[in-house]
Structures are given as C-alpha cells and as structure tokens.
Image (tube, rainbow, N blue to C red; front, side):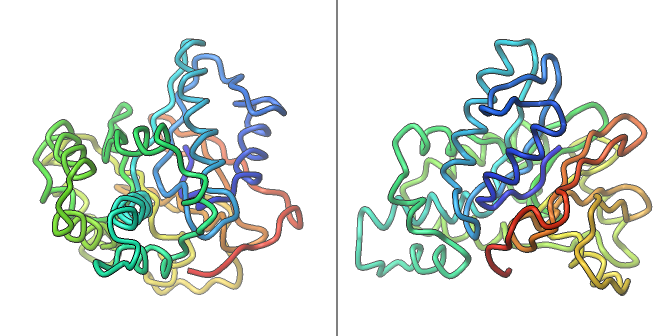
Length: 278
C-alpha cells in the first residue's frame, strides 16, 4: 500500500525495491502481489511524470506476472488534468485552473512532459476500490457519497467528470476533493461507518492527509514526521499519507492483511532531501 507520492520518484523507487516489488531498473518482481497506490502521484516533488510512468509500467508488468496494481485518482490528478485541459484552450488562464494547480505545488516541467498516453491513463483512474474488507480511497472524506452509493457508481461518475468539457464540473469536483479530516475527532468512527455501511467494507485506508497533520488534529504532540501508518477512528480508518515529498526522513509503504498492518518499509534517515511544504 502506497500513499501520496507527490513526485518523489526516487524515494518511491527505493521503497518498492526494499519491499521486493521491483528491481533496480524499476521492473516488477512482486509476482502475485497486489500493490495499491492511493493517488496524488504529482506536484510538489521533482518528477511527477516519472512516478506516473513507473506506476503505469508496473500495472502492465504485474498483470503479466499474475499480480495486480490498483492506482486510484487523487485530488492533485484532478487539478493537474484541469490545468492541462483548460490551459491548452485558454493560455491566459481566465478560468483559473492553471493558477490553482500551480499554487498547490504544480510543477511546470510535469505539464511540459505530459503526453496523450499519460492523460488517457490518468483519466481512467478509479476513485475507489475494495481489497477484501479494506475500502481503498484517496481522501478521508464523505464527498464520495455525492458521486454515488456504490463503488461502481462512484467510479462511473468519476470517469464522467474526468472526461467532461465543462469548466463548472471540473471546478466543483476539484473543490469537493480537497475536503479532509472527516473521520478525525470524537464522531470520526460514526462518520467512517456511514461510508462503509453505504458502499461496503469494514475499514477505510486513505491518503490525502499527512499522518502528522492527523495527529495534530487529534491533539497528539509530535516533534518529527511519523514513520508508520496511523490507525484511528476506533480502528475503522488507516492513514497512509507519509508526507513523502515534504520531509527528508518521511516516506513509508505498508503491507496490509485482514487484521491490519503487517509490515512497514520506511525510508532510511538522511537518504533524501525535502522538496517543499504543504
């Protein structure tokens, strides 16, 4: 399970290699493993396009090996696709999508390297998936219920929105997708249960909100980025956003089983430099 990468290609490569899922050249070695990416491949870090193309390649190679890669859409992919689509139509950015994306960590070199195959792949990303009793989503938010009442309905509506030519639909989607922290606080378990009871599953795994921000919201003091996923909301939720692109010592991936987190692979201290703030 991989949370928000945000362009930290080399760090992702290192984590996957330590986990035995890829070799030094970045090719799949995970055999029948199921690797999940929770979205936000782009922005903030130095090589978002490199991340996207690595995930695309692993998706194809894993399938040939009998494994599986599930790659969800995050809110930064929505911002990126909107900036790309409408900036081509109106380079003066009167609509404002380019400015919105750039102001949220958008990297111009990612946009300049973008190809049609990248757009096609990004536009086909699902918003939600199931793996056993785990419900896989990007955001810790109930906004998904505005898109549908089942996994299939939510993903079908997401595909429609990602193919839309209407600026208003893109704007509403992007704005709704930034919502977070719905499952934090004293009512968090009840709110999470509402989503689970509607679409299925018994536990939610998400990215979107870095674990240290989640801990701060729950009034738990920390002095440094955490190095493992955080279970909360009465065990109903697991936060997988390691802040990979924000801190030099941040970054982890985890193997999940029916009973929770079974293994965590973290970035060795001092191996990478940070690439920006929130």
